[in-house]
Image 1 (spheres, helix red, strand yellow):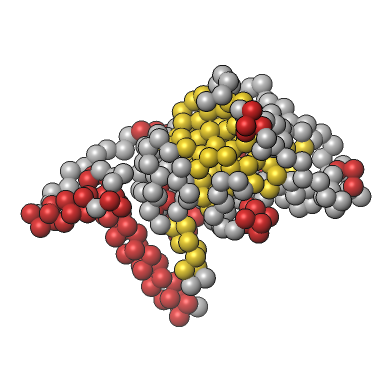
Image 2 (cartoon, protein in one colour; image 1 turned 60 degrees about the vertical axis):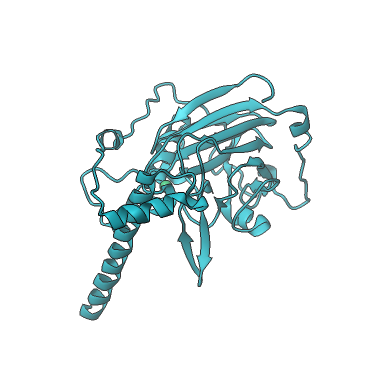
Length: 316
Ligand SMILES: [Zn+2]
């Protein structure tokens, strides 16, 4: 650790926080439990229209960015906003969009009075502190998220992030970093359980400072190059004085209860064998049991949705 911590807090499950960083500062994210995805957005602190772009990042570094790769801003600026300095897990994704209230209703049938906790709404609530709107949320850099492409379809696998695993991002520009602790507990993304994330901001060490770069190409645009530079007259971001975060799903999360699952002797023996396997060394037996149960339910539910859609197709 170099220098004093500038910021340190626990990001609670299904919440988000927007953090201003100066060029040369480092954002550190650490697993508080096992297998929690971080959804990440970023804005130029002095021009909110310059935003992180998963597409450009994907195009330049592939679908799973790793140490040394940059998180790029969108065309037409196309500049490195952050650089991955440290990555203990090696499971980052720039294919999936952030989860949303729509997704949980359309895909999982979650239609209660309060929307299911989700990353889009958490992003929107976090950036409201900086007078930004839900329309300013963009596709996220998804850290600690195990994904792959299977026959052209995007897939999410069990998270392999273990407690204490860290991701560190060097700010290449003054930026508003928006951290969201993904609220998805109905899929494999977070191993069907929401955990917190430890967040820190610190200055870069002298060695890390050497990773600061200036990427300059003739055709990287600035506002000065725009035919119409006044889409929004006031581009400087400022914090709203009366900002109070509100997380409507917090009560629902805090009232989750534990349940006992009786196992037969054979089931207990199977659980012991799985728990002894090195692949599952970071998961407790309750973690493994919960994952197996919910994955089975998810597969059945998906089959049900496919069947329902097929019937609807025939009717219409
Ligand atoms: Zn999410």
